[in-house]
Amino acid sequence: MKRILKLAAPVAAVLAALMSAGPVAAEMLTRPGFFSVDVEGWEQQPGDNRVIFACKDCGSPVQIQIDYGPELPKEAEYQTNDEFLARLKKEDAQRQFASLLIEQSVPDGVELKYDIQKTSFSKVGGLKVFEYSALIATAPKETRDSTIIGLQHHRLMKLTLNHYDDALTPEAGARISAFFKSLKFLL
Image (tube, rainbow, N blue to C red; front, side, top):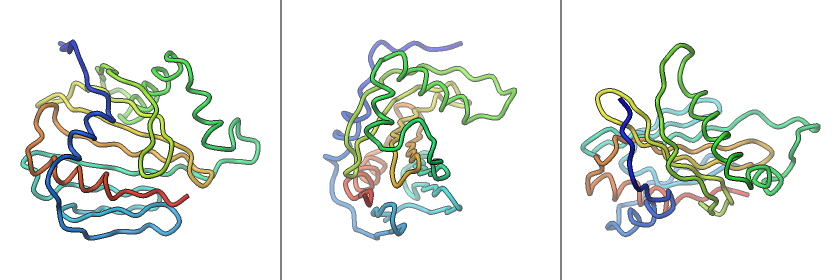
């Protein structure tokens, strides 16, 4: 059974609220040419084209994953971040793209129920991005999926924050706040 929520805060508003939390010590991680971020309080699981950060002391599971796609071919339909974002001007294109990303994140054959609650554009870490927030039906609780995506160095970059809906503790808010305040995409 799918719960329908009446109102959903935009991703940027949620992040802004979290950024009002108290300061957290800095432990910087730099992926040369791509990004730098404060990872104090986060366990890292690096991969070739992705890094997963799991919060150490958030009280409930909180994860941030940054993925990079392969370098785009010269004949790609878009070559710049502005061209990529222009393809998502219309709301139905935004929702279709968000649905595609959500559906590609689960294995084939897994039944998936989700509600895309917000799509918009913003600037995060110095990069203009498309963002969406979705509530995904998972066991044992519904999961909030807040994602940003943009084109950086001729590669698609996707950053996703996942946590149980309505389960963020003050510690989790402080960790997420420090992460996003410190995040800088190297352009």
